[in-house]
Length: 193
Image 1: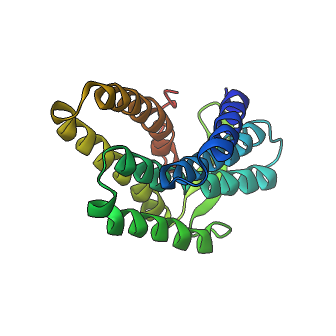
Image 2 (image 1 turned 90 degrees about the horizontal axis):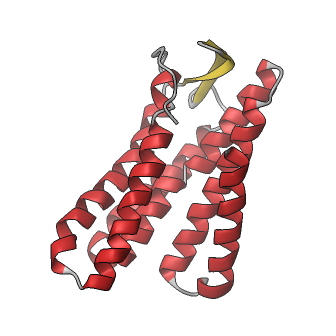
Image 3 (image 1 turned 90 degrees about the vertical axis):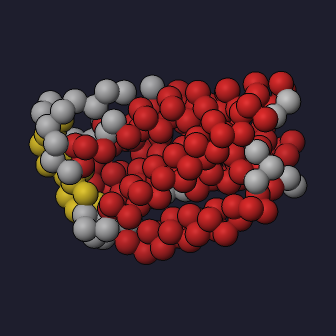
């Protein structure tokens, strides 16, 4: 499924880049899909890794790609809701946190190590700064979901349909992705998705 995710992100990202790259929401969507593409390819390579060193490298690349997903999603939704001006500082703050995370991606402070967990030979363990990354991955989309629910009763039908699709994508994408994170902290449960 990781390669399917990578392929879809590549196709959608290129399509929007060609058609909407001049629009702020289009640029945010391209960033989102670039992050998903990097994450998905690295996830596929990590799952096929035969040694700890390669696994650790791919887990750090996963974190690199996914660092941009929450911020870009938040950015896209703020444009969809017409809340860009109101939330601009928060969107920029989220991107800055993602950018600052890049300083530590290749260090044990972000992804400490890989080790056996359950049926997995090389599962990543969170470093001391990983919780900051994780909060930035989950909180902006959570705020976006809250604002979509809040705005839903007050928007025209076309916008309601768009919000439904975005809410579904939020819950499927972020909740399934989040099912992998307890194991990064040593919780011995199987990832759901």
